[in-house]
Amino acid sequence: MIGEPYFALTVLGVLATGVMAGVFCAFSVLVMRGLAELPPAQGVAAMNAINRAAMTPAFMLLFAGSALVCAVIAVVTFVLWPDQGTAELLLGSALYLFGSFGLTLVANVPRNDALLKLDPGTPEAAAYWPSYVREWTMWNHVRAVTAGAAALVYMLALA
Image (cartoon, rainbow, N blue to C red; front, side):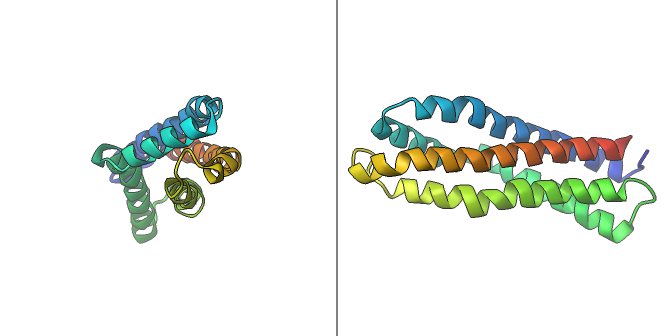
């Protein structure tokens, strides 16, 4: 079992990445499926409202805070190089930082920005909506899996 300061920090990492895995999963299996069933104008308007709401301090604290926890775990691990759990701590951090947080910045956010530029009732929005839903959801599945994997790997570091 890993010792301090790793134990408390790793438990926080498990919780943070696990919660984010749940958020991403809920979006993939519930929210996006529901939005895809709406007419394009309604789906675009609803998703744009969700994207604007995601910029609230509460969500950003959870999302960016999880990345910060993972970054701190990685830095502390590199600096102190523990006897146990090193590979798990570094892998868990990489999974979330690259597979969830980083992927959000390069795959999901650009699609959100493109959608926000469209007037929901236009033919352009209606044409973009099906590919947006398909691509955004595919990348969101990856975010859910990598965040869940990060939580699992962090738990393995605790064993």
